[in-house]
Length: 193
Image 1 (cartoon, rainbow, N blue to C red):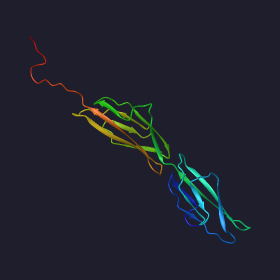
Image 2 (image 1 turned 60 degrees about the vertical axis):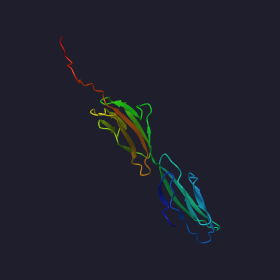
Image 3 (image 1 turned 90 degrees about the horizontal axis):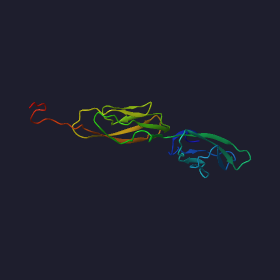
């Protein structure tokens, strides 16, 4: 054979082709699967297993058995192809919106997320000072720090980690408006007449 007969690949990616040689009285081969991955097939002319791994949401192992044909004493060979899912992150719409506008010093509505597929964690980038992302609870909370003089827009990204395959991300925008200020230009604010 060429290439590994026990492969681990990511969801929806090509496997390394596996080619078997025929010997003895064998003139061909047939393949059977414990669970048919559909998009991975045997080319009978070259005795090569190839194709693209199916899209999965949980780690899935497909076991194949290759049986020689054309003679009275068949041989068998087995192998496995394990397909790992990509990381997936989703916004919990029952919590705060991804895009929020607040006045400086006002707390945001908490923004919550959930993970699936192969994701085991997440990281945040682009949050304004005063907001934090809890990587265990998967939630953004806090109050944008006061002290701005003009509208500030913060584009943030939450990205999955840990899948070993493709990551996923969600983006949002926090807009912070400065508090209005009134300043006395002339006269006294405390008069006695």
